[in-house]
Image (cartoon, rainbow, N blue to C red; front, side, top):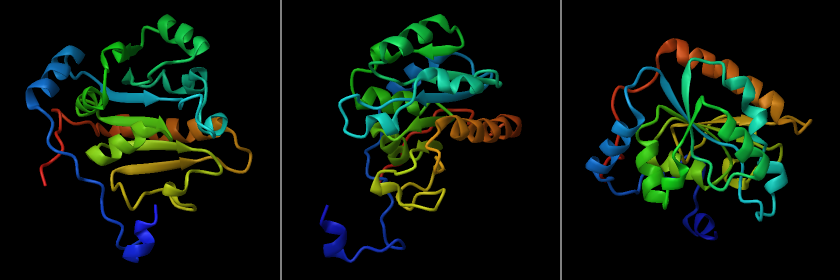
Length: 204
């Protein structure tokens, strides 16, 4: 954590996080085939952090908070590992959320699935950083007092050019954040912003 100070890093010189090696194309294609035809925008979802994380109560939300998104014209794909009991019950009851998380045995599998999605919507978790490093379009929903890596008073990230930030206001209410995400997702769906094929991270 002292390296930015040692390097004299500024906002203008923060390097982009594009250091991952290319993923196996055949394995990405296997996920693509498993997801089926691209009839609608594919949107990945992560709504909670590790419950043992010290700031979990501020970072996480129950799945039901995302309900306003589910009437939009998109295919929603859960990347939420170890959902809590209430979320697990709701997830199993919804037929409009694709859930292959039982097969996401490591970050490589998760990265491969992300490459087949058009957009990631997530809270502040390792998944958000993985998506940003892959260069995937990613919307991160942040608490009022966010992790220092996301800085303050901005909706973008100098580390991840494809990430957009949606922040709580002083009410610390995620419902307002989800409303803002819904408005933008409606525009995103209408614009047909999805990709027609999986995108692998470029080699350096």
